[in-house]
Length: 128
Image 1 (cartoon, rainbow, N blue to C red):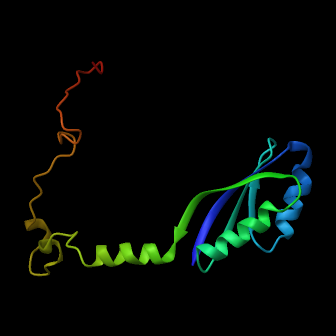
Image 2 (image 1 turned 90 degrees about the vertical axis):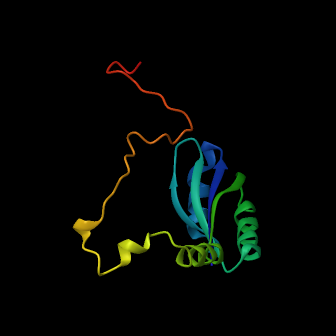
């Protein structure tokens, strides 16, 4: 299953008509709009081809200037990433060991002092 968010643009004078048509359209789900003529909808499909067919239906509605995909979610892609995570050793084995008492686990990290940007910069109390 694929789900994509679409930003639809129309002229403000046609906004009510376009919103009504989108709400009645079976190709999409209406979510929100603003007074400038920007409308947010989503479309779903079993694959990209079905989503594109639905996008063409939306684009054919009178007074729509544009309908552009902004975000896309693919269940197959997510499943692939989940398999990678499930098969990786993300959690240290000692945290899953029932024979180790939590109070015996020593953490030596300190994110406040960690050099995550590749350089060390210290600020005084004024932020300089």
